[in-house]
Length: 143
Image 1 (cartoon, one colour):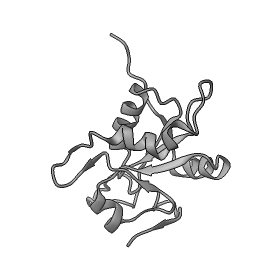
Image 2 (image 1 turned 90 degrees about the horizontal axis):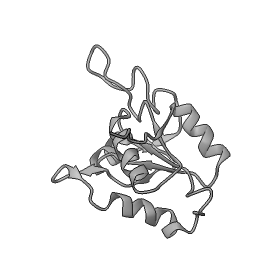
Image 3 (image 1 turned 45 degrees about the vertical axis):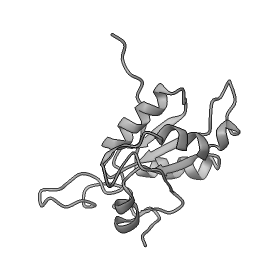
């Protein structure tokens, strides 16, 4: 039995640092459309849902949409692979799963924001109080 490859974890600040220092890196918000629009999202994030309404099943086109985002491989080479892809979801669980899927499909430079956009629930069942992109005051917006 072989162990599945894992995307590399980044704190929200480390993800921001990577985006600042690697202009070719892309931040992909994989939450549902409702979360992306109404809860908010990191500024500059591209929205490609991993699981979305109305059926709440894994997006069968997710990997293809990521490939399209990377210009069909135009920003990839055999040695270095593609530009870094940083995935973010609500709390880091879906981005881990989606990152594994990308790695299985041959992507090499895959990261996920371990605290997500909103972080884990606190003792009052609220988010954005213990961690996450918003908690750390990183740039975000909502409609």
